[in-house]
Amino acid sequence: MNKKITLLAAITMAGTLQLMAGIKIQHGPYLQNLDEHEATIVWVTDKPSTGWVETAPDDGTHFYAEERPKTFDTKIGIKNTSRVHAVKLTGLQPGTVYRYRVCSQEITSHEGAKVTYGDITSSDVFYKAPPTFTTNDHGKPDVKFAMVNDIHGRNDVLEDLISQCDFDKTDLILFNGDMASVLDNEEHMFGGFMDKAVDMFAKEVPVYYCRGNHETRGAMAPYMKDYFNPLIDEMYFMFRQGPVCFVVLDCGEDKPDSDVEYYGITDYDGYRTRQAAWLKAALQSKMYTEAPFKVVVCHMPPFGGWHGEREIAAKFMPLLNEAKPDVYLSAHLHKNIRHDAGEDGASFPLIVNSDKTLLKAEADAHKMTITIHDTSGKEIDRLAIEK
Image (cartoon, rainbow, N blue to C red; front, side):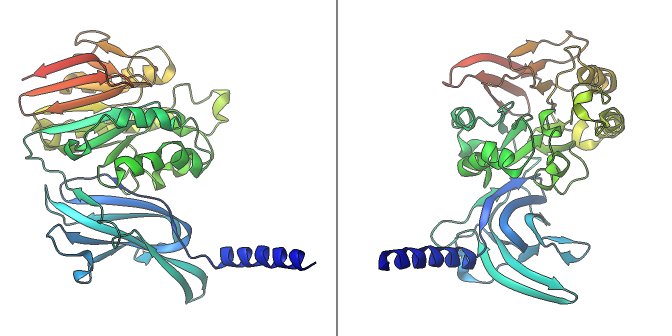
């Protein structure tokens, strides 16, 4: 009997401790949409909370040397109560290293004007050095970047590929779509690839996410933008690092919107039409025209014959051919393909990266070199573009 009582007491105590457990950071933090004067930091807690980011210069002082400036996760002037936090830091200096810490305080109730707060959690800057990031610099003389795609939740493949990068010398990583097969829950995003990315590099090296067709599927698909590219207008965007301007396009789905697989929930034809209007203006901007090299990133290539690919060919390619980017980086087909300029109606090279290869690139103002590597690190293709 005593053993039964002891066991019951232990079980009860374990349950009580679990209920008393404080808030914790489940996922992240990780960098999004880094630019010359801003950076967005995202993290996810296990309970609804407010959130903020503290920043410090990389000046050799201890993070606890003084109270650090706080930037809160807010919407229309109200601190956001959520599990998912995204904070945009602004007013930053180009090419500058910043240290940071993310913090959240649990909100246990909010009734009328009364808010009841719980515990605070934060990323560790006591036992570990605080994570850092370096803002983009349009005047940087060179840039190195890498791209993976079509991982479909295979963390082992992601690790084999990404581990080939020297993160101290890599400016950015491109995720070119279909990192998950479907987005029904957070586990598909974080258990499938993003937790691994955070462990390896994403706290300090920014991920720029180009959505694939598989990320348009599932109950969480409409909320993907809460986690990736969260504080920009759309899932398509443009940015520059060093001599390269990146134009990141959102391909949408590969089948017609009327297809039975989508149950009447999509309108990607209209979305691509609106995107084309944005693209026309983007390709005329100084960020694009003044960059020595221009790289287009889009999950689907403009060939293959499916509806989405034909939409890209009809709506995006005439604009791109006129603007003459240096290369178009795509994915989707799960095999390596390279079409040189002049093929498939494109005035520039088209590269399709497979689901088992890493694309690496480096560029200065006069030359860009792109290489493709398998999971063992063996180089299987190389393209050099010179000015």
